[in-house]
Image (cartoon, rainbow, N blue to C red; front, side, top):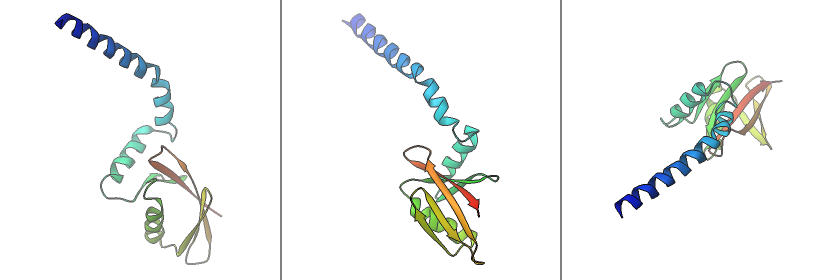
Length: 122
């Protein structure tokens, strides 16, 4: 009886390992979609320490935010940058600074839990 249980558990473990090994290319593709995955992982970890957004890169200027907290993160980014307002237009966000200059932000999902925002000046 004990031998049968051990064999059953080993078979289940082998099936699970085969499943994960077959999905490694997918996980690598997702992790590398924004360049160096370590930068992205550090940014996501900083989101877990009460930050609304975290900067991924300087040039182009990219930020990562939680999908569930996206509007609050946009308001926080707008306030921190000194921009007056923002308006969401589909998959883009239009910001306006104090001089009346428009700044465009384009966002896309990184995963279902996080969105990436790229800032483009017009």
